[in-house]
Image (cartoon, rainbow, N blue to C red; front, side):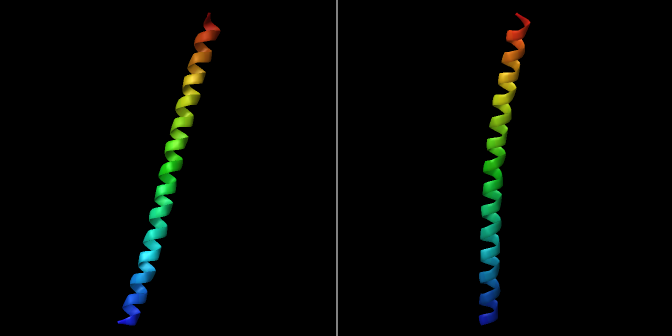
Length: 52
């Protein structure tokens, strides 16, 4: 019974860490998306201004 509790505790810790890593990766992906979006907007604006 104690061995089972130890295994369940280890699994709980492992899945907690994995969940945290997935959350961090999701946040980084959102940040990178917005940075790319802003870069695209600036690039398009610069291209439009250069044509004038």
